[in-house]
Image (cartoon, rainbow, N blue to C red):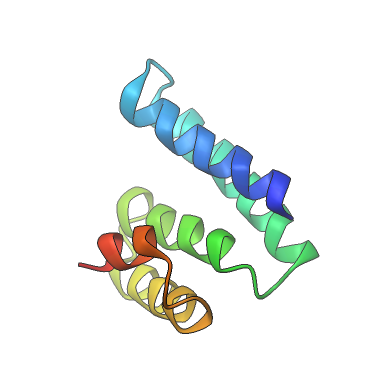
Length: 86
């Protein structure tokens, strides 16, 4: 699961800091995060990635907030999740 989460995070960062088109980055990040969650449904990092995708790519603010809150419940020490929630 951790490897797929790493891929999801990489695609999201490539969209933000490189030239990967957003639609490609979000599509690939979604696939990777879904694979991570299939392997480990309690992966707070995968939930965090799905929250970001739901909120920013899909415009589903409610789902994004629900997922990030779930990630924070699973790992309250996750500074990235706390930052994104803010």
